[in-house]
Length: 419
Image 1: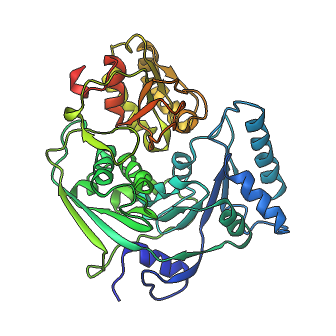
Image 2 (image 1 turned 60 degrees about the vertical axis):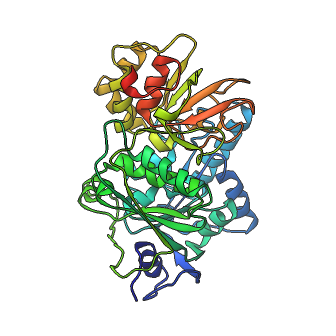
Image 3 (image 1 turned 60 degrees about the horizontal axis):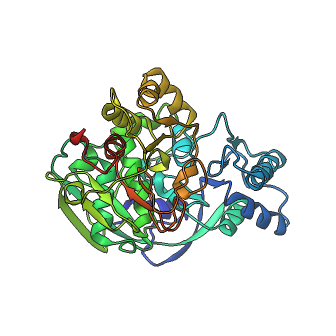
């Protein structure tokens, strides 16, 4: 039987020759993770189950990244629980302030999630690791608890949907624009519990940072995973990071897909998702005049070094507009250091932007960038629901880093060429 890449990975981890969509299967996991919102709930369930040990202390990561640096007493208590749990149960990969990062940028950087893996995380954007050719997906905190005990989890095998991107990208257009376009076309439930498989010559030419961005936002279309076939670029990324063996899989020529979308993206301009949904997408040239009060460049979607370089190209020698707050958040400590060595941080500070230690803070309206009533933000984050970044009467517009940087300079949402 011909299988897709997702089906092959699940079959291998279920110790079966093949699997079919809609089957219920139990699989071994390679890695599990939780953060400061979800892990404490999983830890509580873990203790209620009476577990005496985790399945493998080297195959679990706990990353307090949402409300850190701790914004209040409650968040400090959450992180304290995680720190003590990691020490008690010998969890090797506990990352806190000073050595941490936004989890979905940090774990690939550390070589902890790899091609061919089955990865679960109590965070919806765990699907990010599909960019490496892994079957990676978000689960609930109770499922995380069970997996921490047993090293196993059950899935319904998802149907796969193929997205073929052809053509040649124009300047300032990248992975964020491609995934926004796809979500705009199929809707926020257009791939519900399905595997989005990104293919085509454009995907093959994308750097890893853009691939991570696309897989990261698969969940915004309701997908179980957003996966890309690993190639030489993937190998170059993982070979010096990997802490254990990995495997490359690819879909068979005769694999069956629920649907196939085929788009020539040669004429695409940067895309922007308007409030209050990631599917409310328009090319930037179709937007009316939209003043902003905040720009956020960072998150698990667009906080990698390549994203910061793009923003710095736009901001260099310019100033953030009066009345606009521009927040730049490198996704990990290593990215922060590399940006510092390249002079990117100096460019941001000279432009009167604020540079933060790694945190998810503003993305979910946690801290360090909360919006007041009537304020608008353009952000490189992944969601723009009502109240996502603060007051329910505020608005969030999603864009790529160049658009966010240009908008910070102009004080309104504009094309990078406009500044």
